[in-house]
Length: 323
Image 1 (cartoon, rainbow, N blue to C red):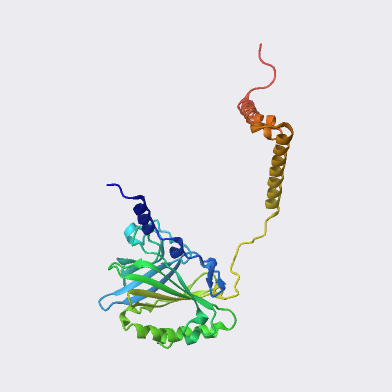
Image 2: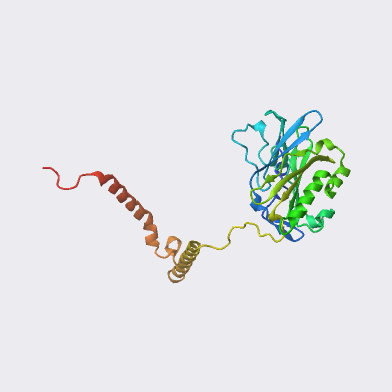
């Protein structure tokens, strides 16, 4: 039985998520009229934390690239890394062992896998109902799409905080507060979920290579999700940060090319109109110097033949031939 065309189209739309729900444009994250450019943070970063399940201690090695899909390492087999489309991939290993315990895609676009999409959600830090963010510039980025081996949904909540001015002191207080359980966001999480076995223990902060720092905060169950919380301290989260946008000024040769192209186009259009209005020309005859243009392939062919003959005859002996 042949399926109706409409049914096939609906199936295709379900299989491939739309760009509006699947894409995260790092170069232009707009929240409440404020544009954040996180494009300079593109590229993989690696974060490690320890998770004690009560039965086994797991070392989590997460690969993170918020702006594009992670590249699968050449030396890794398909079962040792997340599927294509992952933005955050968690590789769990038993402590003091190289054996892989589980591979968990936390966030990404998995059209042919779990079918999940990023579904990014942005919140300006100043508008969060958290006291410590009252005067803090930055943006909270929430992305998902992954599932663990039991089919439980995964999500990442990454807090990008501005580090300009006197933020160093405030930054230290926030980190200490999170570690000691004194931060307001920490208290809120504790109220939402009492499963302490999923908090995890950071194995150290990570330098992002752009003058910023990445810190693991927690990994815990919140409603139907397992949520990975990360704090990313960076100058690119400042509301007046221009980012590292490429220069929009055209170079000298670009201008020469544009001017030459427009001049040639103008000459051809005007010449064609003139031939049509004066002589009633049609087809190739419309173009100015149409005879010369038609001869160009033959001219090039003759020129190429002469070049080949010159190269092939370059080793022949000159002078008089023997009698």
